[in-house]
Image (cartoon, rainbow, N blue to C red; front, side):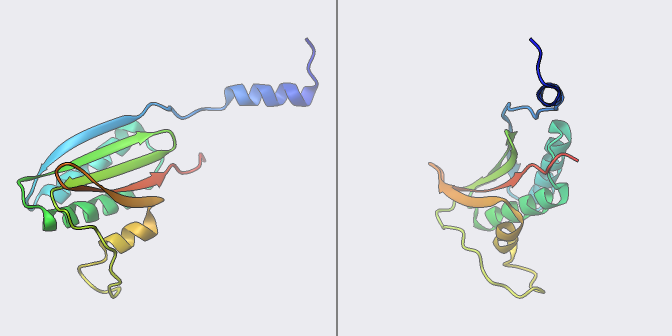
Length: 150
């Protein structure tokens, strides 16, 4: 079969284009509620991005993870917070589970405030964020869409 040159080149380029794996990967990490939990969460997210070669802004993922874990620790009555990191399709996602039944609400805080800006940052920097109720309490999450290939 003889294809016109334009169609043949398009077909060759399409078959040679790299594709991202559609496999959904995830990690579940139980963090001890305490002063080292946020640092461990940041380390876990950084490692997941590196291992899975997730094309997302590492600094944003780490910052937002730290904010969600810190918020969870402020409302956690138990000994642990569950961190779930997943990656697949075209997004990187972090869920932080705690035992609180209080819905997260972004607060308008001054730019120089040391507290209260976590969800505002999450709203502005993530592709999507939200929360859902679980049997134990709630989970707050954010997603980051994959960056375009260079």
